[in-house]
Image 1 (cartoon, one colour):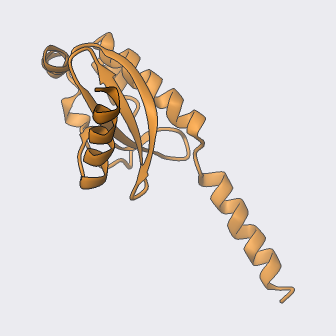
Image 2: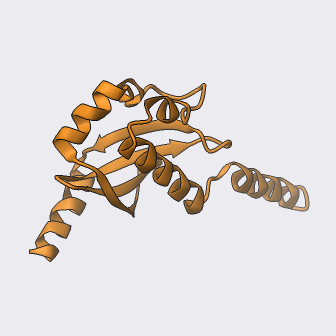
Length: 135
């Protein structure tokens, strides 16, 4: 039993060291919004970890951002919406649309995974319930 306590403590410490806080995610979303609104494609690309899944990294060119902004408009606000399958979700309000962004950060707060627009039954139900509340 005495051997299990140090192992348990080591596991807890490892989880705490590698876990990113909500503040870390908030900072990342703030940067994404700033870089998106200012069409700073290179800055968005620099947010990715070298070991990241591709996600939506390919959308970050000035031309692609301009097309996204034509469709969605300027990013106005965001709100933490929870997690699904280890992906942190943010309800994101744009001038002409609302959707969920999903991201995962590595230990250096770089993007391991990012999707500009996430969709699943759970995410769709979150967005739908909010629309019902607001109408």
